[in-house]
Length: 389
Image 1 (tube, helix red, strand yellow):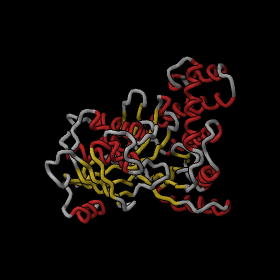
Image 2 (image 1 turned 120 degrees about the horizontal axis):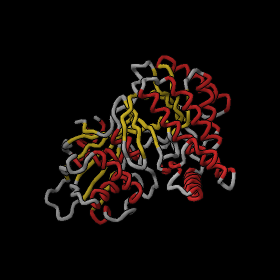
Image 3 (image 1 turned 45 degrees about the vertical axis):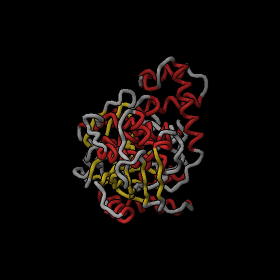
Image 4 (image 1 turned 135 degrees about the vertical axis):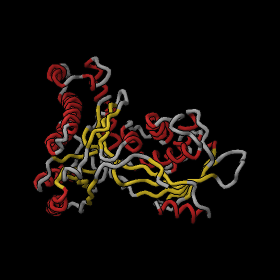
């Protein structure tokens, strides 16, 4: 918080009107189910993007504008209404900020001219939703600055606006899971999200009370062919749904999977469908266990999810598979890749006092394979976007 607050004061010469924060996320289970109208179960990380914000320098300007400074890049950008109202006019990290202004204005909200300073400890390029954290923090800040309270813009409507900023302005075809997690998560809970209805349930996930932790392993594997392969997987799922005569693969029941697979023309399509249908089933089984406080018992479901991503959806890479195998050998109850695939992070459910041992086992396996050393942190489920000062 202090970095954004102090950066604002040093940059603009006055203290900010307030400071807002939004977290990154990991998805506990439910991968590539979101665009199939299925189910996901993310939770918010302690890592946050923080936005200090205040009114624009000149009150009563004829045309409002926005000035944004990023501690991470050291850049300052400025844009006005013309750029905010033209998707793609601001690119790079600034496009996510301009996209929020565009989405709010397009939805009919008056967005105040403002100055912002941004600091973040959400790792970039690790699949932990740094872009959603930025969008959620900026959206929360601008809504508060503009007096757009939760009566006019309820929390349950905010993720769709943040997603629209990324889809419609920045041009990234993401689902709504990341923005939902960054805005709607609660401390000590995972967010059970129905990606069709957008209904949510805050499922108890009190790792600390159970003596557990989620060890997040940043494999540091470069994302390989992620955009083209992501699009190919999505197209395969949509094509399969059409062949099966259902609106989305979410509508194929687990007990009807064998019959559905028999109707599909080739093995790759059958494997893609099998992953989505079984993954939705695993999400619901995980939720049932968490509702009854049986956290350790979700481990095999996490591991089965990884096997499905590796064998049926074919989105893992060697660094990810080695990390999962090593974490399990080191004593993890379960482990899986999290995120879209082809690199990124692995999560492992471990006893809190065993996290260092599991991390050491993964590090040794990486050294044996000649991979660059991974990085690690333990995560407990934290709160979503909020004003912190």
